[in-house]
Each structure stands twice: as C-alpha cells, then as structure tokens.
Amino acid sequence: MTKASARISDEDLTAYLDGEADEQLSRGIDRALETDPDLQNRIEALMLPMDVLREAFAVDRLAAPEPPVLDLDGPATRQWAAPLRLVASVVLAFGVGISGGYLLQPKQAAPGWIDVVASYQSLYMTETVEQTTQSPAMANAVLEQFHSRSGVDLAAVTALEGLDFHRAQVLGFNNKPLMQMAYLGDEGTPFALCVINTANADSALTDRMAQGLAATSWTSDGVGYLVIGGQDPSRTRRFAEQMKTRLEQG
Image (tube, rainbow, N blue to C red; front, side, top):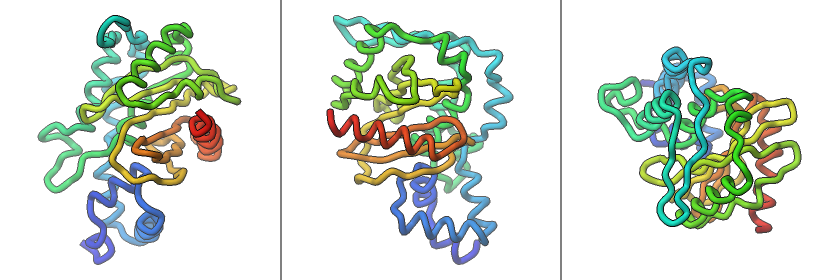
C-alpha cells in the first residue's frame, strides 16, 4: 500500500463517495486518485457491482413498482410488484451488509446511503416513473406519513421549475425511513429527491457522479438530501438549489 493510500481510511473513502467528506478531505482524495493506483483500487472495491446487478435484474424484465398503499388509521404498508421488490431487497442488502459478498470483503466498509440510492435510481427509465404516477391525494398521504416519522416536511418541493413530480414512496436504509420523490425532467429523464435523517454535520451542496448518475447532496439540521438523475451535474445542482431554497422557506 502506498503512503497516500495508507493515510486515507475506508471511512474517509465512504464519506467521499457519499459526498459527505469535508472540502479538505475531498481535495486530498481527488489529488491522490490522480496518481495512486492502490487508492483507485480501494475506492472501486467500495462501489456497488452495477454490471452484476444490471445483468441479474435487467430493467426490461421488471414490472413497474406499485405505489404505497396507506392505511390512514394505522401504520402505512408498502406493496411492490414482486420483481422490483426483489431488486430493492438486494440493493438494500448490499447497503446494510451481507456476508461473503462482493462488497464485504475483510476490512472493507459497506457503501453509504447515497451509493445505495444511486444503484436503485440507475434502474429507472422514463416509463418506470410515468407508469407509477400517484394521485395528488396519495402523494400527499405518503409525504404526511414521512413527515410524521422523520419530522421533515417536503410538501414545498412537489412543484418545481423544470421537473414534473410523479410520486413519493418511503424506502428504508439502516432501519431509518428514506423518502424517494420521483420526477421527470422536461425531456423525460428520471430524477429523484431522496431524504434521510442523519447524524452527519451540516454540509454545503456537493456535486459528484454516483453509479454513472449526476448527484448533488447536502446536509442540514440532521437531514441528508440528495438530488440525482441524468449525467449533467449542473442540472442536479440547479434543481438542488431550487429545492433547498423552497425547503428553507417552508
């Protein structure tokens, strides 16, 4: 292991991949990656094996996910078409850790929530979002459910310039609710806003590529936010800025 690689822990690399590393750490890793093959190999080992996932769960063989079914008098339940439920369980299993797998070789850290979300989002096509559009009443019910569980009110980001909101669904990561709000861009590109409670410190907007998708993330008041979709980070940043402003205004 080179000196540069030895100075950077797997936890540092996971924070970097999640867009949660501070500016000094991010710059240091960027510089090291340019010349350090050991560090490049380590960071690749921490990323999800997307070629394997795509081969096993090709999008053209997946049924569209059904919207969540809510019992407004009790806890919400989620019903999924069987193939996509299997995909979600496999992806989330990678996130929380399964023994003997590609990701959890000895001394390797499991990927954080942003990479798990990115692997899931990369399976989406225009039709996936179009065919699962919710009624306003259903979408509002899901948002209210998430609000009651997490304390995060997302109603302000259901109407945005350049994005058409289609549905909200509550997923989960490390036993915490994770909101996914699905949108389509003007040209049909799928985008998502994903939100989860986190213990990480506040951080400014950070751009990166995650599983081949543009992603912009930030943390505010114990909540992590991620805007992801397409291949142009300038678009996800523009949408993230718009969303951040709306959410701060309430």
